[in-house]
Structures are given as C-alpha cells and as structure tokens.
Image (cartoon, rainbow, N blue to C red):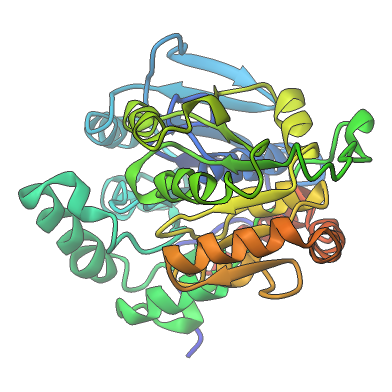
Amino acid sequence: MAVTSPDKCYRGAIMRILLLCWRDSGHPEGGGSEVYLERVAEYLASPEGGRHDITFRTARYPGSAPVEHRSGVTYVRGGGALGVYPRAWLYMLRHRFDLIVDTQNGVPFFARVFGRGRRTQRPAVVLLSHHCHREQWPVAGPVLSRIGWFTESRLSPWVHRHTRYVTVSAPSADELVDLGVDRDRITVIRNGVDALPEADTVSPRGGDPDHLHLVTLSRLVPHKQIEHAIHALAAVLPDHPGTVLDVIGDGWWSENLRRCAAGMGVEGQVVFHGHVTEELKHRILARADVHLLPSRKEGWGLAVIEAGLHGVPTLGYSSSAGLRDSVVDGETGILVDSEGDLITTLGELLDDPVRRRRLGDAARVRAGSFSWVATGEEWRKLISAAAV
C-alpha cells in the first residue's frame, strides 16, 4: 500500500533538517554508520543536494567541541552514551525543523514524539536503521538488554508504524519486515565510498608469499569478533610465518584483543594501529592481501567496499546479514559459516595468489560502482518526496 502522511516536506524549498545519531565519525567508537550519515548530511547541505540547513546532533567525547561547523554541516554535541538521548529530546523541544532523520542504533531518539515542526505541528521523520541489534543486546547486561530489545522490536515499530524507514542493505530490510515494518515503507539506500587519494589508486602489493598482510578495519567491540581474525592468524602462521595482521580502528574492547593476541602467542604479528588518518588507512589497505571481517552483525559493511577499492577481497561470515549484500560470495570475496571454515578458507587463499587476485580484481570493479554522490542523491529524492 502507498503510505501518505500529514507530514510535509516542501519540494524545491530549502529545509531545516536535523540528523540524530549517538556518535559522529570523530568519536573514539565511531564507525561506518556514522560516516554514512555524515556523508548524507554533507550532500544535502551542498548545492547539488539542495543547500539545506543541516544540523547533526550527537554525543560529546574527549576533545570534541559542543558546536562545530564542517563541510556545510553544523554539529551540536551533548551528553554521553546514554545522556545523548535526553539532551537530544530537550533540543528537539526547543528547536523546530522541517524534517528529522532519526538514527536507530538499537534505540531511536523518538523524534516522532519529541520533534517540533516549523510549518506544521510535527516535522517529517525518517527512521534510519542500519541493522537489527538482536544479537548485540546481551552485551548490555540482563536488564538493559531486555529493555533495549523490547524497545527495538516492539515499542519502536509501534511508534513508527506510519514512518518511512531507510536501511542500507536488502537483508537489513528483511530484518525490519520481521519486526513488523511494512516493506513498502522501507527504502534501501546503500553506502557510498570516498574516492581514493590519487597516490593510492594503484596498490603496491607485491604478492610476496613470505610477507603476507591481513587487515581488519573495524570498531573494536565484542560483536565484531576480531578475536576470530587473531585465531585465524595463529592458525596460518606455521605455513606462512611472515604473515602480519593489521588492525585498523579502536574501541573499548581493545585491551581484550591485545590480551587475546598475547595469549595466542602472536602479539608480535598483530599491529594495533588504532584510529588512523585517511591516508594511512589507505596505505595499510593497499598492501593487504585479504580483508577479514568476522563480525557477528553488519548492516552493510563499508569496510568491504573500502578494501575492494584496493583490490582486496573480504573473508567474512554468511550469518552477518549485510555482508550477503556487500560481498558477492565467490566473486568479490568469500562468506563462510563458522570460525573453522574461516581458518580453513584463509589458509587456502594465502596458498592461492591467483584466486586472491581474481577475487580482488572483481572487488575493485564492484567497489568502483558506489559513490556518496549516488547515496546522497537517493536521500535528496527521498526527503523531497515527503513520504514518511
């Protein structure tokens, strides 16, 4: 059924738009989902996107400014991991917007309840959900996990029963349908990817079997399961003793991973780079032979496409829904069903440079078909249509 709403965007007019997210990409635990919303914000603020007045409301973190203007977007920060929500509610009650993009990272900001419109009583609301968090809630503890899952699976679908949803992959859309969201209210808008720095357009990978590089590009949190990458490294080292695992990213699980590497006796072969500049990130990816993404859950997997730009295939799990969309299994990477299969398949890939190169070449071609301009244009069309 076609969904209409009394909420109206104003076609062709400059709108005041609020984007809500619990983090931005500068946050110590920021990742691909935050980059996605920032690139959308930047496009909507650009001449091509409509020159809209864009505010990005998010949390504070050490070293961050309460207000920052960057690439046409105003970042307003307040509150921490939990405090970001009530601070955002107060902000919505005090300011008026034409449209609000409410990001549901497990728990939405309930802009449908707290948002105030400039021209009407309520602003238009679009709910962005990268994926369902069913598997991730247990880490929050027995009480918060039950509250969180109830909110995500029951309360939010009811509150947003007339709201337009956006997600980033077809499997994530299926998950929303399983939660009771009407499929015709869901729009899939995939991630784009930043263009490579000119100096990095050709990877310097030499294919030296004695100096192979694995890489993970991820937030360091439990559900990313970077331990599996460390276990896989330990398993292949006897046959490939010069192999190194580069870990790009940081997060509160970092010390556990360092202990894991030490416990496996491979701490000398694992390099924890932490947060790095874009230039360094691309240099590390450029020398990699295989990208490991053993995450339990991904909405899409921006790291898959970033690695693919350098001709690096991804090895991950088929149970991670978004990877079934971002990885073309057997063509641009390989998806497996268990940690044992991950270890076995990695060993096979390291023994077969021809297959790695074939997968990597296909990954590069596919990665080149994505852009933030295309992503932003889909968002421009969505908000202009005023369908929520």
